Image 1: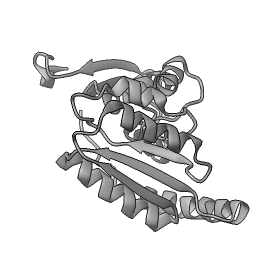
Image 2: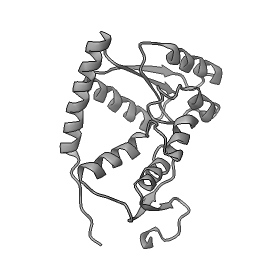
Image 3: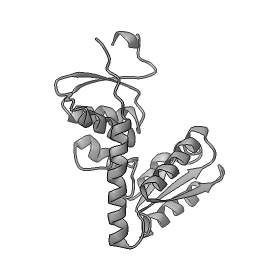
Length: 199
């Protein structure tokens, strides 16, 4: 089987233009820019790269992006209080909780504190459950990007066998669920999969 390399740059440019127009409409209606708040607890190199990219992307399309950084030692209750404040803040439209959280903080508790309508990464149980059941939800960005590529390339995966490598809650699992909703037959591979190349 031969592979096709998909150039996503034209799609990304079109999507950025559409998002700029939506951001301008929001600003006109609400007399303020839409605003995302990202919470960072501790230092993780990959999370910091993602955080910088998120700020750049938000600025490029006209969104406000506040970075709320906390020390590694922050207590779980303090972080939950910050999430609750953002939930109640009428000027915060979405919240991104950068993972991983420090080991002493229970990720599920904090992500479930996010109001589903502000949980833009779909990390909470409500959004994840809605995705599983096929109800409207925020879809984690990796899965949403894959879906956008399939649509843009006018590719149907219905009836196809699809292999998903990875089973994380923000990557592999949502990708598999989105493909399943598109009527693909899914095989999920992970670090314990034997002879991945043969699958």
